[in-house]
Length: 236
Image (cartoon, rainbow, N blue to C red; front, top):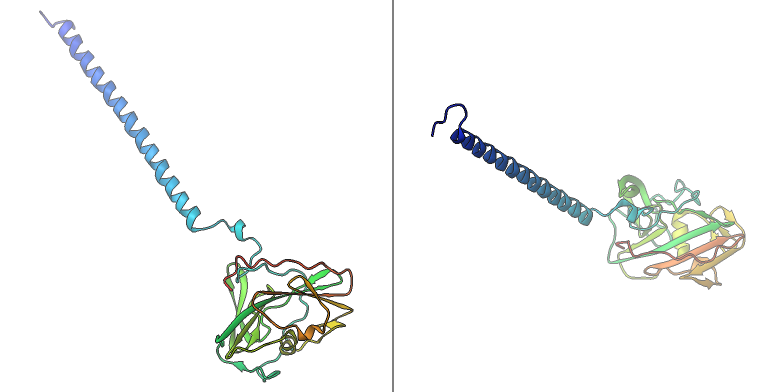
């Protein structure tokens, strides 16, 4: 049969070409859909890895360099007048930290119901600050006393060349701040003391520093009930 004038053969060829092009377009659309789906999976995997390897900052909100909650409120006293290298109560200041006996206690002080923070740098002579996990952590440029603080989180580090008993009074002596039943640093008034949530009725100077011990001193009134301390995030 003749193919002139767009006869049946030419129309059949044209239909085949259009069908092939339509198939190619469908294949291209499928390919794009598959590529998009793959990208979503890859991005989702990356997000999952990020979530797994980098915890949300909100999970550690308020925690300082040592994984403990930072203390708020004004400092109880500065470290400007603290011991600067001389031996205090038989405790020397060494060029490096002594770790034969290494424990941590927590101290919180409230004055007339308001928390007053324990500053970093007590027992750290010529402290050098650095930013760690969004908070300040200090190291010594000269020496460390066996009782000292690295961050403003109330943690007292006991790092001694031998295992022996140390007291809260010795820490305050290194700080060069008074401590008695009627005074904590510059704050005066009746002192209510708690150790691990229980009332301590003796001289607060005699409170011994124990591993993961919670010490709370309330000066004046109102007396703040003993506050729990979360050690679960600390590597101490």
